[in-house]
Length: 122
Image (cartoon, rainbow, N blue to C red; front, side, top):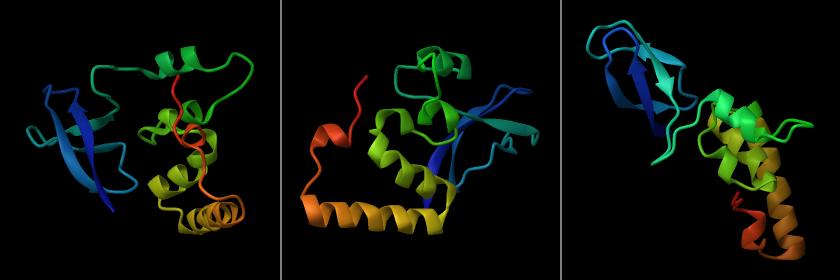
């Protein structure tokens, strides 16, 4: 599976997107100067650094989006959906198939999951 990822070069200032297979590397060669450009994590209208994510995390423990900053959008998915999202992003087929089997069994026994159990709104 391929997805678009944002990268930026600290040497020449290039900012851009690259279509890459999962998991996306932390650095790629800059298209302008060839030096390493680092992966950027952005959302429309909102930028958060690692410090910003740590600031919104519960003081007494960790949360999945803080512990897995490489998984885009994880902070906006409810906890029950996060295991599959992390496994899919990292290309962990074994964990993904187990999680999808668990979700299928839960669906077959209980029916559709309520929307509030899938989408997390802060």
